[in-house]
Length: 212
Image (tube, rainbow, N blue to C red; front, side, top):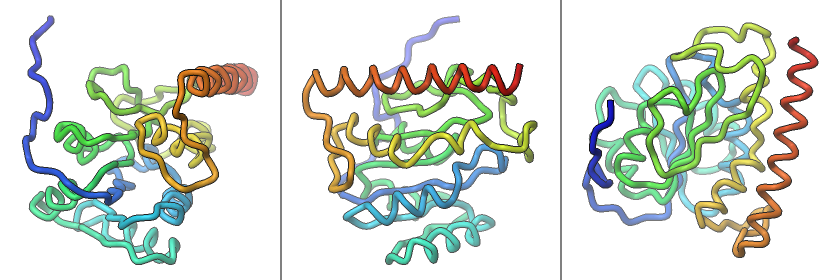
């Protein structure tokens, strides 16, 4: 059934900031992008970074902070007061297929959501941000995620690299001083999309060979 959905923001709170909010946790382990990739993102971000999660996920957030070797703030709460404060001060949210990223998108914050065992086409993704996911033979393997990868390689998220996330950030016109040049014209965007399509096609062919 079709229904009318009002324009965003659905959660209308004032926003002004340059912080990067990262949501690296998920109840289901298979939905988590590798922690070392989040560390790489943090190390290249030129402004403040906030790691968001629940109180039970604090140890994961602290591990990422410690490995990044940068001053990173942590919000780990069973509630949303400090989470909303952090989101209001952000210009970008990167995270797994998890609730906080959907909340950020509802606030009309640019988001990059990383899909592995789940898929953006399953009805939960309705945002203007970027859903990063790979066309693999084995995915989606679950609608909500699971505790272990059926093939024990987590390739669906391992093969989404930090470079791909930076490219997505540039595509959202969030230009950062890193090894990826900003995509600032139609020709460059067309070339990048063509290269990405070719890479994804090669990966899909490899996957079908490995997992017939």
